[in-house]
Image 1 (cartoon, rainbow, N blue to C red):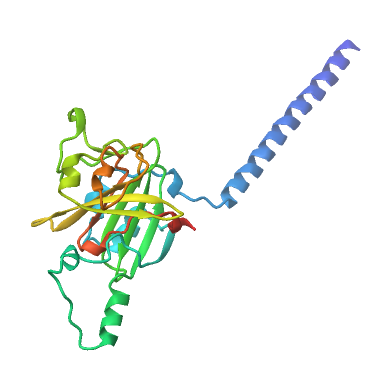
Image 2: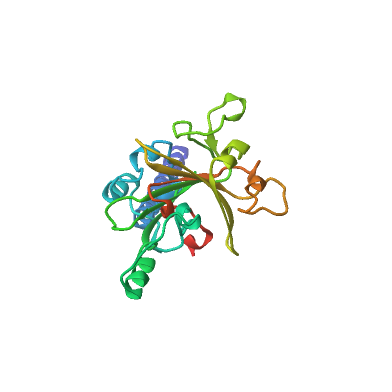
Length: 255
């Protein structure tokens, strides 16, 4: 009798264990099926490094951009660069001549229009522009909070502090940079950005526009007084061939 009870108990216990195992397998399969159906967005989990400045510099192809970075998070027509005129225009050293007012209007409308490609990575925001959708005209990279990016391979016009590698998100604006750059300051309800742009002649023929947000404790900053940028953290840099191809990440890029 005891043997029969033990046998029945063993069968019941074994059946219970088997049933639990089958339930576990069933729910695992259901979760796996749900994960397979879930749409995943890869960019927020990807990290870029300093190789982007060489691989996707101005002059490279948009096709290469998509092959390396994948599908952009956002694409739109942008017509609001940091600089809308050449420095020579502001100084009266360059004057445009047009055959008609229609030609002038068409020139003004088209010279600033470009296609912007936005990428939102884990460690940085990337904004790339192209006027013909084939060739990259500008590349801007802005590091996010708690991240940094080595830019020591880019041309520098001032010495990094403590002889450490120069990094976005770590470096501060120095007087040497202010003294040798074209300043700009953009303020809107979306953001507040300072820009200090340097031009490098041959063989690079590239503008390097460093930018960031006023965080040096001053209540007022302005392009008319660029020394007010000294001490601010450099969060990003834009590489561009033409002076008015300087497009940096803006708050409205993600609306």
